[in-house]
Amino acid sequence: MATQPSAAPSTAEVTDRRHDGARLLRGAPIAAEIRGRLSGEVSSFTERHGFPPTLAVVLIGADAPSAVYLHQIVRSCRSTGVTGRVVEIGARVTTAVVRRRIQELNRDPLVSGIIVQMPLPRRIPLRAVIEVIDPRKDIDGLQPENAGLLTLGYEGFLPATAQAAVEIVKRSGYRLEGLDATVVGRSNVVGRPASLLLQREHCTVTMCHRRTRDLAGHVARADLVVVAAGSPGLITGAMLKPGVIVVDVGINVVADGIVGDVHFDSARQVAEAITPVPGGVGPLTNAILLEHLIAAARAQHDDHHTSAPPRPPAARAP
Ligand code: ADP
Image 1 (cartoon, rainbow, N blue to C red):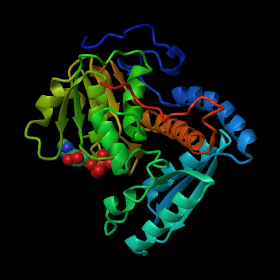
Image 2 (cartoon, rainbow, N blue to C red):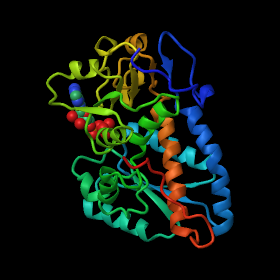
Image 3 (cartoon, helix red, strand yellow):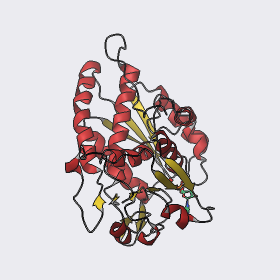
Image 4 (cartoon, rainbow, N blue to C red):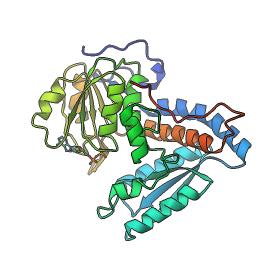
């Protein structure tokens, strides 16, 4: 077996026992643990300030998969007493209008965190949108200042999905140090930050992308595979090393529903552990976003002289 649990999982109840070979790493129970801890923080924040932490979700145009995700986020906000504000902007607006709307949210003292729902319509460049988000409100860590802090190993907001992909493995009791990790996909939102976080965790990281010549070879060598390619069934059980840990970040809408980038039925026969889709990384991502939101709200509103200085959650320096 390529990887051994480092200890009895601290959150043993959060994962299924062995099921058809692989252990299922589910996000929801870990997320519930995090939300349970956060709801106390939210109510004391609300008491101190007279308003709850507020997340603004900017939605540009309608898109089926992202609308599903959006509703999950708003539900998850409500369950912890946080206000989730959906800011809908018509699909036909110009980039300048989107930027102006975000700048208004930057100035709104009630809004502590801003996320922009992706994917954006093709004609609106991602960079033009994310670069205007105030770094203190950029709770998904995508804005250049936060991305730079991550690259340098300094504290800042981390991209929540990438953080969830790493946390789900750690919180299930696996040690990452020294593992050969292969990340499939190099987007700024998931693949690239996941690779940086895995380096912080002392993995030896291989990055694969569309022009990788031997994807199967790089996947076959890995003790840990993180897949964020947006391609259903890209990784199959036949490509995997027995005992591997598989984190599937893909969310693809197909005729049968939602599937990941990993062919689940074949992969679960080979893997030590695998995240299901749906139900794996997604629910944990939402809880981590909330964690970031509350850290942002405290950083913006708490009196640092009378309370413990809040900090955005961040991984250790390398
Ligand atoms: P996400 O936001 O989930 O990361 P993107 O569509 O932004 O998704 O990025 C997809 C990434 O996956 C790109 O870096 C691309 O190179 C990679 N990718 C897509 N298809 C393949 C493939 N067949 N083999 C390897 N990498 C792929």
